[in-house]
Length: 255
Image (spheres, rainbow, N blue to C red):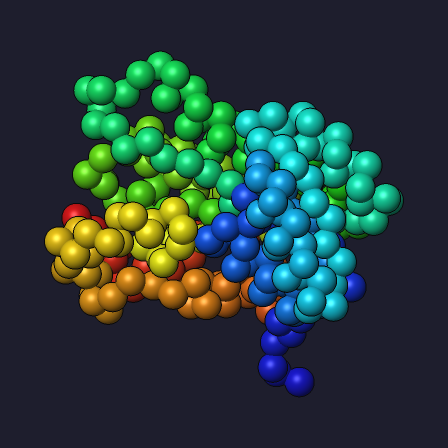
């Protein structure tokens, strides 16, 4: 009676950037928990590979090849492929970083990071809410970062967008609570992914990360998917406007 329900049976979840790293791990975890998945990413080969992985778990996978910066195209395609089904969970995972020091950031870099990390997340959330509100049920999960909470050495524009996602999460939760739409965020630290692979080959860099992490290690993706499943399922239905930092304790003291 008191064991919360972490299952997503019969649901439809959308994951942007769903073919690599955190996005892929979340998509597979949701499929394992019973959800069909709409995957959105730029790389067709990676989309097809992740689709096969989801299908091997017995769930349907629909792929959309698109850049999240072109959010209007994504909305049109999702509207077409969902075939009248409601969207139960929307995960804004796609993001990017250009590790420029502030004095060297170009306008082009600024526009690219803002469009990918922040602008797309807002307008895709707006679309997701428009689908969810009539049923008075839905979960939106934004993938932020510890960089949205504490200062990082480089990547000021990235950090600005991730901070904006945390505040956006609070405001959307406030506005859309009347529709029973839960809006939450996850703030990861370093995890072993294809995007961090090169950085984590630098032993000095890894030691610096561990020094700033109370658990003294890099995270494994399986340690992140539980928080996403909590926020997506009925187990987290009374949580909204929150950011869960899955960071080995890093945000206790930051840099």
